[in-house]
Length: 123
Image (cartoon, rainbow, N blue to C red; front, side):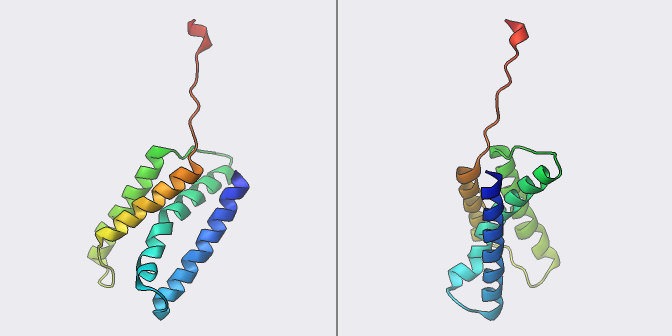
């Protein structure tokens, strides 16, 4: 599964840079240009965190709570805080929907189930 996540991260990062180029050059469909990067941002973030934690020998399980936290974090930072300080950025509720859809996609593809710890000494 780690190799699969690595390939996924590499592919999504390449797509992100292509979308960034398309947006900068005003190429292609406007919906893809404006919302494609927002859709794949959360999956890139979660894949990167998961792979970095394993690389540092501190593996973490990325479950539902972590996906929700990533969506909320991206929404608050990129749609709430940064537009206040940068005049070239605008807050857009559709971006929040894209973050949530990307998080849901990642969750469905790579959800890591937590193992229940059974205390055998209590029997």
